[in-house]
Amino acid sequence: MNPAMDAPELDYRRQSPGVAARFGRLRQRPVILSVRGLGRVFGGHTAIGDISFEVHRREFLCVLGASGCGKSTLIRLVAGLDTPSSGAILLDGKPVAGPGPDRGMVFQGYTLFPWLTVKKNVMFGLRMCGKSPTEAECEAREWIALVGLSKFENAYPHQLSGGMKQRVAIARALANRPRILLMDEPFGALDAQTRAQMQDYLLEIWRNVDVTILFITHDLDEAVYLSDRILVLGANPGHVLEVIENPVPRPRSRDQFTAPEFLAAYRRISELIHPRGSATAEKIHIPRLTKAGDDVE
Ligand SMILES: Nc1ncnc2c1ncn2[C@@H]1O[C@H](COP(=O)(O)OP(=O)(O)O)[C@@H](O)[C@H]1O
Ligand SMILES: [Mg+2]
Image (cartoon, rainbow, N blue to C red; front, top):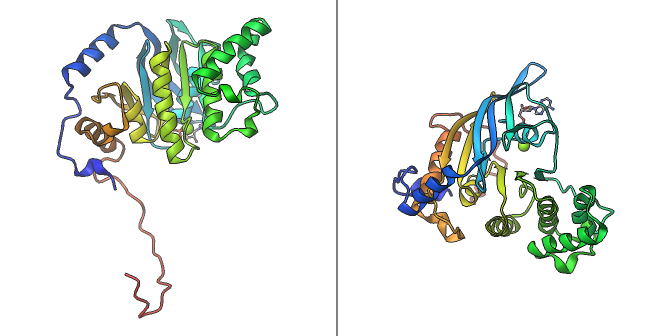
């Protein structure tokens, strides 16, 4: 059941003085990422149309949209793994031209090197940046401690659970001190309980580390629980439906899932993604396989 649908109406734009003040401060912070009129066409098919938004320093921006609306296309462009067909992406005011250490990436699939230990995985980028083995090891250990995996620094990825692997991936991404962390449905493959834990870890890490986060999800609860603002995308081609300032105060806790502001934000996103009257699941005909008289209801 979706609790948001039973809650009394509350305007998602109504912000408590604390939340309004926080957004006031956030808007004053420098812009780290600026996406302007971004478009990407794949062989005649426009995956994303004309997307523009900005992310401020230490902001946690969630991008939410239905499957296929262009979220991964967008984040790959920001990562520099793909080239725009139109528009521009600026990081600290400079155009993005290919991947770089100023962007850390954590994707859904586990991207650790299976032949390297946890410590060596985290050291990898540091060594690539020219740090000495001792320096890289020392820093890697700090990041591994931050994600609570000190006991596992000599373990190999296959010895870790899915959640632990993603914690290593986060440590590895942060170790390079990126300006922005790009996360594409990073917890999508985890079971519900691990996913909830990872959300809490990420919020805690983000509180303790000076990093800006662009986080992609199709999970409404996840977006409202984590974000400062939510960029809601529509499909065909991918376009911005609305940018929502999340009215839920920080620090966050899971008790807030039933708070009026949480439900109001949830309801608004839900309306945007599934407008009233839009097609729901297609009716299918299921033949009756029980015998008459087999009363199970
Ligand atoms: N490399 C590609 N070549 C052709 N079409 C692509 C490619 N990448 C994505 N697309 C298309 O772009 C659209 C958006 O895909 P994607 O960004 O993966 O969506 P999402 O991550 O929101 O599920 C889809 O229609 C998809 O088929
Ligand atoms: Mg995707």
